[in-house]
Image (cartoon, rainbow over all chains, first blue to last red; front, side, top):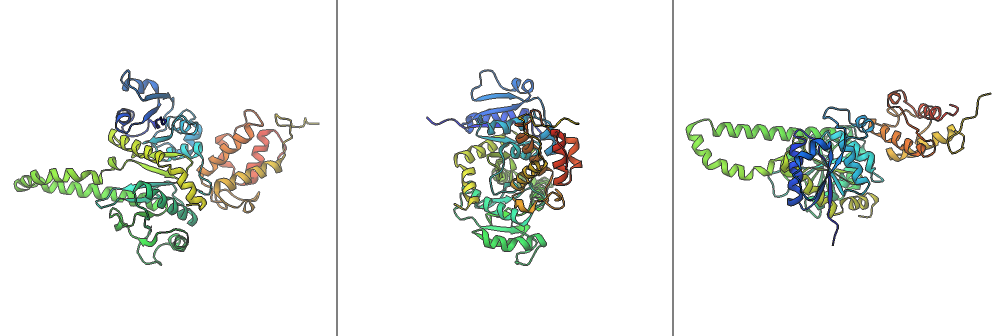
Length: 332
Length: 101
């Protein structure tokens, strides 16, 4: 009988913590078929877990790193923080992976300091599945982990992103493109111009530059960039999506005729809404660390946590970390 | 005559050994060639080490040196003043009770 997969969750991290996080954890036990280790303040968590609930344990952690705390120093000074305890549970073998919806920088710092990096990787990258109305979704790497990047680091991001796309997107030979301000090879700032030939040389499937408008289209499969522009691109896409959704709802409520039309259109729109709902993309894997850490959206509700746990479980089952190590070492 | 300082395991504190340890750990953390790191190397300007890399360095040194000197710790308030490998070396040596370079 195989050992059940245990996911450690920072139960105090996120805009809706701890209530929505615990609700998601309770659902994940049955919906994702995992065991959960909730890390956080026991007096806040215990009342949220019905007596007799199986598959959930609580590890008390007295401290909470706030969304606006400085990430690296907070992790260092707050040794009993919930996110740190979650990372330690993975490091010590009490959990197979961790999920955090709190301070992204602190979650990354906790995982980096407790797991360590994959040898050959200088800096981690966040691999986000970009919501897409397309046959296949896209990976955006890096979505904000490493803001100031050296050219070689972006090459590392691309190689890891391509390997991860194989399991996460189910694409055997993923295409990879560099996010720039034009498709021609000479486009971009100094960083992009330096990276381009390095990607050509070192990354199979590299097809050249892509532009911001290629996000959410499904092509290329992997969009690689530094964490600064990656985060801006992701947030811009999210903002634009919200603005368009607002416009559609306003139009459909603007006249009696539009409201009649909405009775037909709205159910169809809502049916497809999950394509662009961050709750359904399930969190982002931190690439480059020697362990599985899934970063969930700060606004995650229970469904977002369930889906983040699913992604964590899948990463464990598909042995993503071992595959990434092989990729970095050149064995894959 | 001042008493000779020792680590808890009896080894005297050797600044060159500490500098070598810092260079090794920095090379691992930054994934760069150790030969490119000198005593005069500045963490931010020359090595492009960000705050997270420096925290990694600090925790790595505490783990290594804590095994040799019980309770060895680097004060977070002092981190901002450590701008070069040599300054870090001298700081660590002084915390261990040895002679500074």
